[in-house]
Image 1 (cartoon, helix red, strand yellow):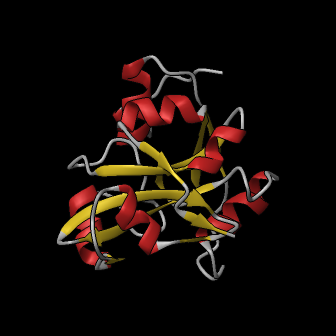
Image 2: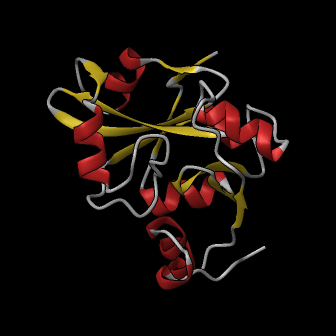
Length: 165
């Protein structure tokens, strides 16, 4: 299941981080359709994977600090639950430009792994119900599949019910 990835051969900071950590993962690439209304749903459809196993990476501002939430593409982010999970009072979605600048990734391709500046991360507790989940590999049209435990370990994520169906 493990794949070697090097930056010069088309790897992303996310796949490089996974390779360097020695974590088993699988890369899934697909042709991104810019007209699709949802990056995450497009990924699930293109890979033929249940939307409950495909997770989107969202960046929110919690009391002035950027925080990453990783939630199933089949639902949405509960901002109040996210704030509570990190001991904050109020959460709002981050400015897309700030999210891109801070993570080093473009919107629709933000990965919880290999970010320019590591942000506090909350992984929706539903992830633990799956042997593997898919998250962005750091590029639109590219996902990585790995165990939720490995993702949590590498991102130092806390697990909390921050997704809504």
